[in-house]
Length: 624
Figure 1 (tube, one colour):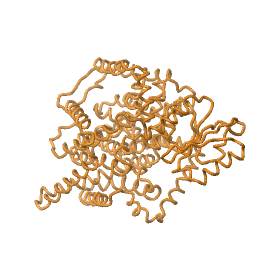
Figure 2 (cartoon, one colour):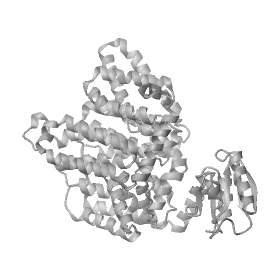
Figure 3 (cartoon, one colour):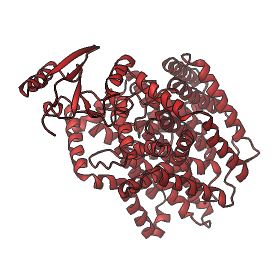
Figure 4 (cartoon, helix red, strand yellow):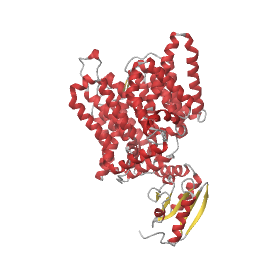
């Protein structure tokens, strides 16, 4: 089972995208691997969407697809498993220190997250619940959100043959922040003049996600927003990569444009549009910036550009067309919530939105550094106009009641603030008066970040993870290329797939069940699990959604809110009151309705604001 789950991870994060990217000789191995991650997410989602609607989304079909991909991977010759550095890069201690600091931050968050299943509210109630529905081939057309993230979880469940493998599916969420950091590292390799900016951006990229919403654990929570943040970093990397590789510089005008490479990179960026709605805006801005930057070249292939635009529109908008009724309702509620929760007039919201940033002093500092970068670098001004400003205005005017919806522009904020720091550092080299305040600012940021992240909480795991990553990083970045060959790669894949066979499936499932029961409130969850584990004909309802995370509750639990009619349903035998949601008057209405229908019931206080209502006299409600 776990071997098939690992196949699912490869399918979601590597195989289909790499098979597309490996064909391009201008891309080095590092670029192919990075492009394969978002491209695999996109292709996996499209595959799932087609197979579910055709009724073929089964373990056997998915295994055939994965095995076919492996055959294609090893059947053709090529230098796929060769890694080398693009350009000689001079050692920069500040950039290296910043990169290690960013790595420590991510490792600290990972050390706290290892051994946990999905526990955050929206992940349990929405993203993972949708994944389990897809895995069961249930086509539900009223979901308003794009489904690439649930599709990633669902493919692992389908290949493993069980939806009770959250420990494995959570690996996808743990990979994505590191993917964003690797994109920043690669920017420093292909553009040495951006190396310091990219590495310092890595620190801010990790810190922003940990500081500005919930807690440090949010970055690996399973929400779609950290995926969007990593895709924002990938968009920066892709934009610079296209300029360096796919589109030749003016001094190399005789070299032809490699259109297939360019189209593949653009398609990989479009994966952001099937992750969450702000990604649609980010993809459109990326294409607009690319068109404006290289218009003389694109003008020569106008029909190709129109065809690519049609494909991107189909990728980004097909889900909203498929769920158009729900999407219209979602848009209406989306605008209504924005107007209710953001009392400011539209023209003032770009200013009032700054209150969403938790620490106003640090927010002022980021704004100051961004201002310095805009004043000192023309390239940052172009990035600001094309990417950061439009995305910020979209978020501020429409959805600034929730910072999560702005995660696509956080990497651009990090890049701008890091550019400001680099401008100040360059000024300190020329004028000694700047040195003390600039280095004081750097030390202040490092101390604040270390105190906030609390790297001492799991220092053993954090140091071990950091050491392992740095050793691997050093091996891959040496001047001599690392050549594995097809046989070595095949042996590695076989070891990866066969080693987990030593772990019995029953033990793995028991571990996942125990972790799901222990999540959030162990005593409460255990009581609900014991109550329902022997029930085969009846369901549990609640105004609270977290019991959805309990094993076997997917089909026997319904979050029906405080709706009296839903509680009276024939199949609902148990109902959970949560005082934070179902207030006293609503609770009284439910119990009065049961009495009027002559349905006997008992109410047991569970403590901590929860109570369990049990219908005791069948029939438990109106006829089905």
